[in-house]
Image (tube, rainbow, N blue to C red; front, side, top):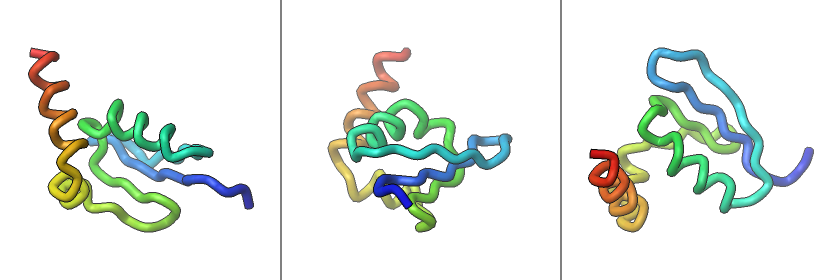
Length: 72
């Protein structure tokens, strides 16, 4: 098996999908682009609590708040 990050996610109202990323940077970019549309997230078969991830990562939370402000 290749080293990397296997992401399984389900968008709100959609079916589960899977993506494979080679680097952490690609994973972070994916999170930043898709996090608002994800209801379930698993990284390398480990379920991730999105709310807990956001509350523990202040930089990511700040970025998402700025992004929402800019979208308004």
